[in-house]
Structure formats: C-alpha cells, structure tokens
Length: 196
Image (cartoon, rainbow, N blue to C red):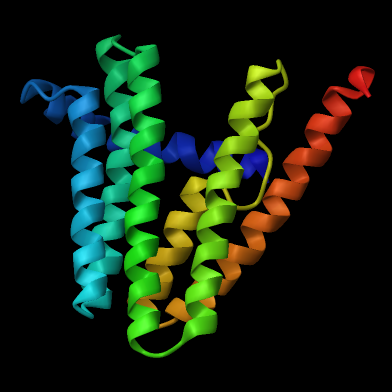
C-alpha cells in the first residue's frame, strides 16, 4: 500500500509541478497556498450546509490539490521551513474540522442523529491518524503506514459528496481511520519494543 501511495504521489507531483511553477511566477508563497487551501475548505463547508453537495465535492478535491501544491512549491523554490510544515499540518486539521462540522450539521438537519455521531467519530479518527504519526516521530519512530491517510480521506469524501454516497463515505472513513490508528499503534509498538 505504501509503495502504491508513493507511486501515485510521485505521479501527481510531476503533474502538478507546472502549476507550482506558475504559482511561483505569480509570487505565491507555500504558506499562502496552505491558507488558500483552508479558504477553499471553508467554501466547501458552505456548499455542504446549503446542500450543493456535488459542487462541494469538486471544490474539496481542488482544496486537496492545493494541499499537495504547497509542499511542491516549497521544494521547487527551495524554501521549505519548519513553520511551513507546522502551518500546513494545522490548516489540514482545521480544514477537516470545518468540513466535517458542516456534514454533521447537514445530518442533524435531516434528523439523522446516528449519522451525526459517526461524523464525530470519523473526525476523531482523522485527527488520531495525524496525531499518532506526529507523536511517533517525536519519539523517534517512523509512522507513515495506514490505509486512510489524508489523501485517501479527501478522495473518499469527495466521491461521497459527488456520487450522493455521503453517508456511506462517512461510515467508511470512520472505520478506515480506526483501522489506520490501530496499524500505527502496532507499528510503533514494534519499533519501540525495547521500551516495553
């Protein structure tokens, strides 16, 4: 799975390199791209709340593309910074929170309280996927495994929005993020086994 992810990511980086060069020529910084991605996610949330789900799915994919572009732009310009990495990660979490809150609100309006609760679990799982990696790396372990990283979650949710399968997408994200967290716990336990 990790090898496939690297191949796909490499292909996307090659495809997006001209866009990154264009942004560089326009004077855009990686941090501006990160914040721009967040702004598009706020737009996505607005579209979800107003029941324009197909448009929301398309905008969510575009916002996810910007999430890749900030890193490509930083490497292209030779300006990756620790603050940029921090800002990117923070914007990703806030973006997910805003979009998932809008989806929870949508379900609540429809009287689907169980679905709203599953949205909370899906968001918790999404945050834990990122947290487990960050905490592991802080302890000196590498932790990139898992079947529901940010890229997979963006694609799943976008498909759910566009195809009218939002409920199924949210349930799947909740399940897959839980699996990913367990995968990461087991991996880190193995890597740090001398501490047991």
